[in-house]
Length: 423
Image (cartoon, rainbow, N blue to C red; front, side):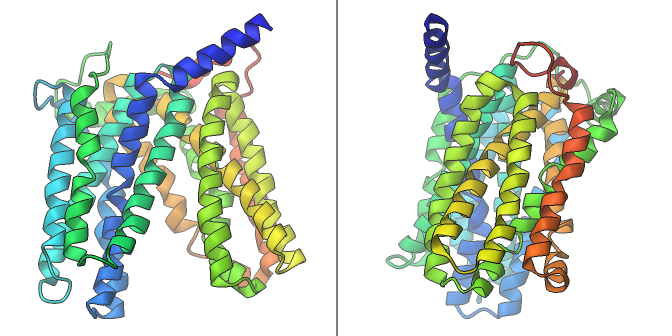
């Protein structure tokens, strides 16, 4: 009993520490800009009467998120001001992001389309830059045993930031012009700027790279010199591919089953989002006990089982209780899996090249959203919904098999991250 009490006190002290508060607030700062160049911007364009083809193509302005590893070596190599390497770049990215969001609000989707596109690309570029630095900061600020909980709070803050931009932005647009909505959203970065100024620079034992060549090529060489580097990359591609494929086409699935748009919005979007957050935070707390390798196994299996729930829903039909149950289980386990996955990627990075290696890994992580999601409609059409979701469940197996190679279940009692995957 005394040991359990000490553990609970340790969990509480860790949860309410400065490091966790910073992870939460930086997550909010990273989540806020994302949909300002996607859903909110598309709503503004549609309201102004822009052509639908042009509205769809505007998603291309988000390409900097996929290519952020190209300029990440600069962020590892140089220290721009006295705040330190991470906080200095973070302050620059956040201030530039505020200016570019305000500039986007000062454009016009119809009268000034070029200025709108340039501003939107700048928002995406500085947002991606902020993501790079925040990921590096979190890796360097948190001990290995706290990466899971810190990653889960980052995901929690990120979701809140996305809601503030999408839901809050669209609600504000009913009362203010979109141009003013973007000025308000620019001010939403103030908590992030304050966090950057008030927190401490993370201590790093390794010296920073001495040249851009070392920051780029040596960073890649350092990663690929480790045992099983290609297995690690394959695991990152495949660990969440099953639920990624399933999630890519769930809205048409719900509609075909006969659920109304209001039911989908209430159960899937609102209830499901809160369940995802509960899973992320709960998963982070569990990771303090289990460690990252064990969490990847437990949450990975639960992810696969939850994907199979969609096949059950396909058989049961338009049942609101069944939909609620499936969404609750899938969202909670998905949040847990994401937290463990993000923490695992952080544990792989060498702190000398944190920004570059983490940016590369997260770029690879995003590939299945494009490559695996594209053929899901064709597969569902020919297989039928039930067999399609069974296939998505089976797609989780290769990732779990590779997990046995890159993060086997620890034999020792210590829950901390396995040394084989940390630098």
